[in-house]
Length: 303
Image 1 (cartoon, rainbow, N blue to C red):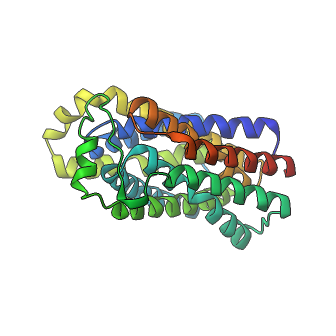
Image 2: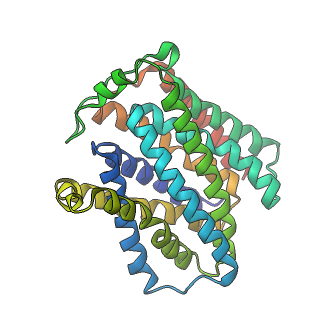
C-alpha cells in the first residue's frame, strides 16, 4: 500500500463518517436515505456521461453489489433508529475488516502475512473496543439534539434499556459491508474503468430507496423532503466521493488492508458522536483508539 493509496483511504474514512453523521442527524431515516441515495444516483448519472461503460465481466458484480448495498442501507437505517451514532456506527464498521480478511483469502487468494494479520487483528480489536464501551448493562447514553433529531434520548428509552436489537442490526450492517467490499473489489478490477464502475454502481443502488419512499409516502414525500433536502443531498455527494476513493484504492492494493485502514472512520464517528450528538467518548475509547492506531501502523509497515 503506497502513501497515496493510504491517504486516499483515510480521506474516504473521514468523508464516510461525515455523511453517516448527516444521515443520522435527520430524524426521519427514510427521508435521510432517500436523499443520500438520490444524491448518489444523480452524481452517478453525471459521472456516467464522461466515463466508459464497465466491461461485461463487471456487470454480475455490479448487480450483486447494488442488491447488497440496498440491504446495507436498510440495516444501517435500522441501527441508527435503535441506537446512538457513537456506538452503532463503530460496531457496523468494526465488524467488517476481519470478515473481509477471511473473504479475501477465500475468494481472491489474498492471504495476509504474519505482520499484516497481526496489524489487522489489533486494529479490529481497537475498533471494536471503541464500539463496545458503554454497552455493558444495557446502558444507553442520551444524545443531544442536532437540527431536527431531538428525540435521540427518547429512542434509547423506548428500546427499554436493551441494546441487543440495535447491536444485532449494527453487526448485520457490518456483514453487509464486508460482502459488498469483496464483491466490489472483484468487480472494479474486472470493469476496465474504476470511474465507470463507480458511476453505474451509484445509479443502480441509488434509486432503490427513493422509489420505495415514493411508493410509501406518495404526494407527501416532496413536502417532507424539503426541510432536510440540502443536508441529505450533501450526504449523497459525500457518500459517492468516499466510496469512489475506496474503489480506486482497491485497484491498487489488497482488499484486507484497505478494509482495515478504512475503518479508522470509527474514530471520526466517535468524535462526531461526542461533539455533535453529546455522546460520551471516555478513557476506554481513547485506549481502544491507541490500539487501533498501533494495528494500522503494523499493517502499513508490513505493506
